[in-house]
Image (cartoon, rainbow, N blue to C red; front, side):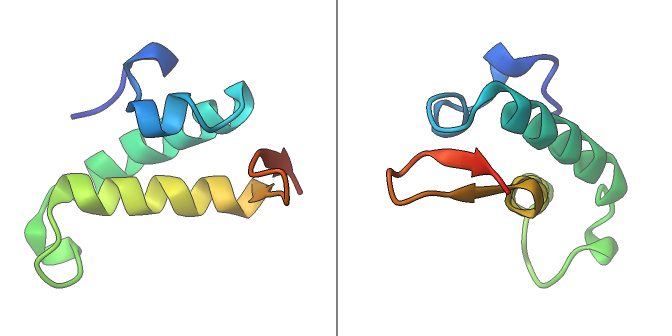
Length: 75
């Protein structure tokens, strides 16, 4: 299900990513949720939700990287 705001994101996102990265995650997730609604558009047996989470993390990793301090930093 799409996320309306940052506070509705999973704890694994809210407690780890900085605010801007959370925005990227939310927007990418919501976009992927719409794009991959048909199972024929997804790879293998992945659920719509699983696919959307993978797309969202990939979008975050495009702009952020995890540092040696275990925090996410802009690239």
